Image (cartoon, rainbow, N blue to C red; front, top):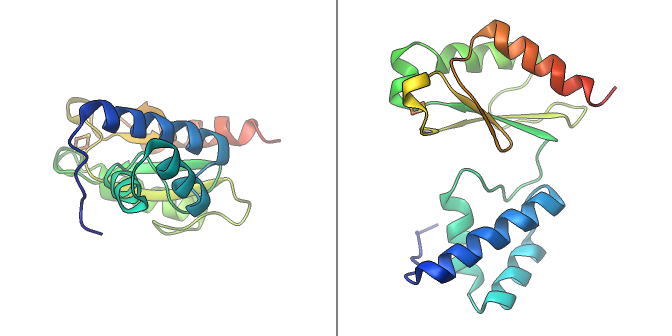
Length: 150
Ligand code: FES
């Protein structure tokens, strides 16, 4: 989809906030929610979809409870982290990037730069950033997250 610009910074800010709240409530941005947000803010659904698809924070498809976003940007590559972490998580969870575990707990994604280049490799889990990640730290994090659902 072509990026549609919303030039008014206040309108853009209202939209990003509304999308964040909707996603917190439903887990992802459903087509109905996008239409409702567009209607309430006086925007077209194309404008809302365009903003939602531009930012990796927003999801327009159903995902697992925890979305593991592994940074695939240059800095993370240079420290040899991105590929290693993606391979490790794929093997541990039995899924490839873009897939969700059968229990609905984890979705694995790769994204470009998480703005944490100085502490790469980095991953984001939902809203939380984790830096200087290693396989050991990933194991601890997965266990912690699973522990919330026992
Ligand atoms: S390239 Fe990974 S945080 Fe910037």
